[in-house]
Length: 533
Ligand SMILES: Nc1nc2c(ncn2[C@@H]2O[C@H](COP(=O)(O)OP(=O)(O)OP(=O)(O)O)[C@@H](O)[C@H]2O)c(=O)[nH]1
Ligand SMILES: [Mg+2]
Image 1 (cartoon, rainbow, N blue to C red):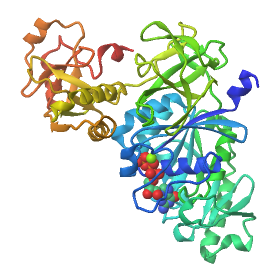
Image 2 (cartoon, rainbow, N blue to C red; image 1 turned 180 degrees about the vertical axis):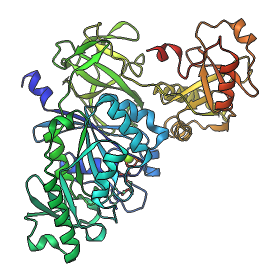
Image 3 (cartoon, rainbow, N blue to C red; image 1 turned 30 degrees about the horizontal axis):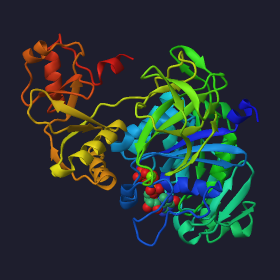
Image 4 (cartoon, rainbow, N blue to C red; image 1 turned 90 degrees about the vertical axis):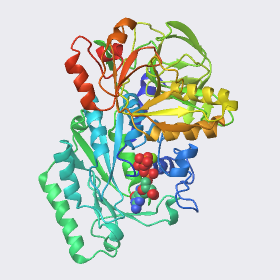
């Protein structure tokens, strides 16, 4: 296969939505239909005790929520898919936003009973800004759902995107019969499978076949037929260009947990989604076919495999070909590094990979100097600046109650800091050496505590801190100038790990007050170098 053919068969996409809409369940079912797992593991004997391929972390299994994004690479129908399941909770959104920089398309999952929820809206906004094509899966049709026409209307009204229903649900809730594929004009009737572990049997027929109607009442069936006629009458056709430009979204209905409509979504997605495209960085366009290998690191995660206590840097390949053992330029250190330990990933499983192409996400092990956002390339002129930064809004001290375990505590904390979802700040002129953790949301602190304990055997104790706003000071400010600042009540000076000075404020009002009264000392919501970019 030529490099062009390799690029053209890659599909790299994320599944996004508000918490609980069914992303992980759908991911599992895509793996099942994609032939990557034999048995979907989403249902086990005990409630809330799930074993999905993508929620592999101890705490995820315990809570039944996704905390960290997961990469799953597999082959299906000649395509190579790099699928990323993301967490929906806003406290974990930094990870999700980083993933969005690494993908070429997204599948947006909507709980059909709830419609468009706030976090979906935010994630959608980011996709729109980046021009990422969006495919919509209206999930949970097996439960009483909103009217399908109302759901389409919501997409258009709330998100301002055109919606093209590829298929249409017949019946709703307990009466849900399956979906009608508008393109092939066939009805796909589904049968419920206990636990949804195996592929659901499907009868494909015409809309008016008697078995299609199932237990639907005459009136409900007539209503659906009328809706379908209305859609046909509107005469809209599938507009690939609008989809690729992120202006219109193909809509698929179904039920992930029951395996309804998953095959149609997978096939429809692969048919219409884009292969990796060029990226524009600092005015230069870098095509995937550029002979230089390049990519950027968008995620770091430690201890994915308890057998290997190491950390993996996830890189999205953007151009050229990756060969194991190749030597590349590392942007942060400006040094040459040899990439000898490279893996393809499937949840927390990994396998050595010798080559990779644009679109692929691979895991690199054994490079402590790699950080989020770093570019690796054989052409040092290429520098990606893809990774967005977020201002922490939650603060808490993290104590080590067991001095005998200081080493484990420190090692664990340092590692988790490198993953870049929490930061540590240290108060200025303070005898307190307890790290003050800062994160986008407080659930991150619980994750830190849990992981310290389960991955490093270190206990910890959280202590609430009185601040809710952090602002960075100019990096060139002198210590004397810091001494001379007059801070609002309750505000404190501190340093981040890069020794950049910050001010912690009790609230937004207090930060604004400082801004008004100290016009010569401009504050920024992020460390200054990044804010300027
Ligand atoms: N009735 C019904 N329930 C579903 C369906 N799909 C998923 N669920 C349930 O919805 C709940 C949430 O599913 P997940 O797949 O964990 O949701 P998620 O979007 O990954 O959640 P986060 O990752 O925590 O944001 C689980 O209890 C699923 O069993 C469906 O089609 N119908
Ligand atoms: Mg999930």
